[in-house]
Image (cartoon, rainbow, N blue to C red):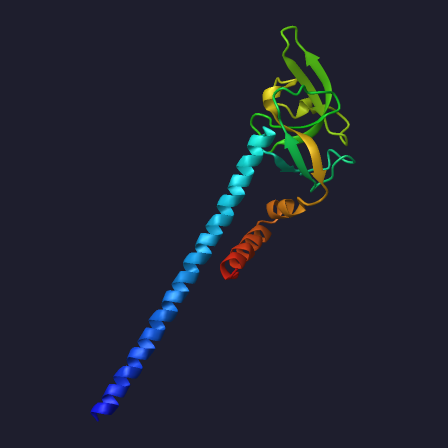
Length: 191
């Protein structure tokens, strides 16, 4: 009877040790996955901040959200921007600018430049696919843009890559599905 009782206690101890070992491995894997996810997020932020420093733009990559610049750029094109202070703005150049009171920047071409006697430059923009200039988009009483309004200038693009961003903004459920799938991928991916 004592041997049987000893054997049962031994079996219980083995099961308990195996459970604790499995639980420890599970916790270690969970910590590893959380750390891995944190490294991915921090790496993306470091790359973004590095691009901001190199390009001089607060937003070095933007997505074209409308068809106002067709045929030069289409909805969903991904633009690469620079915004060096020493580079003068020229007629015909494509700029991304932000208007006071509007959250989303606009991608349009410089139509006219107005240089003041003191050297300050103001400019007027227009979308290639629009029939009129952008004065109707500017804030009340504003007729020209200034250098401070410029987020960046288009230096290159990749066609249609940004369509995923547009889909996520237009369809919030799609955005949450993509984010859940990415999070799930990071958590279950073991390497």
